[in-house]
Image (cartoon, rainbow, N blue to C red):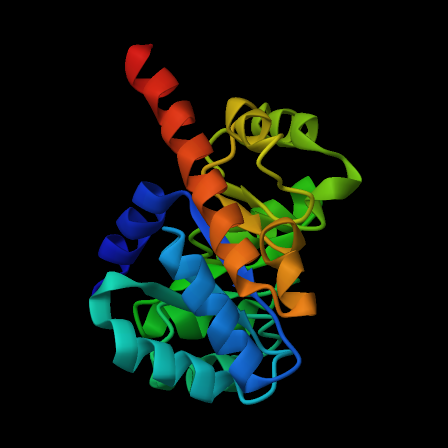
Length: 217
């Protein structure tokens, strides 16, 4: 799949679930719970044991039906391993220019994490495709609007602090997509994967309502 098709897939889904767990089995169960609830773009964080195996297994199970990315990627070496395992996008908590360049070489999306306008411009100049605003909960949805005033061309994906209740606010303030963590996957800490599926459905339903508002404008 070429990079522009991956970008379009994120644009259609608008939500990326963050899969972070203490074991391979738990990560797979979280991922499957999110998919069952209708969220089909997943970031598997490299803080999860055997992250590459998780990505490979999910790719084998779901093929092109699910978009898979690797998260917490700090360097190009890790990014290359993730791409070989089937990752279509690479998400980082910070800006690493060499990682961004490697992603461009292999036609996968580079999604580095930033907080300031200077970091946004640095990431864009290096070839980043989507800019992860992290940790977004520090400033809230209004910060997205503030950033887009001088940088309207920047495709921003806030991560951290995104919930069903404030989902609309992030998009109203200019987010292209959102990364969703504990507000979605939190019940998995107690082994309640059904609750994760229920929360995923709630996010999907809320996004559908938001999109209805877009089509009405």
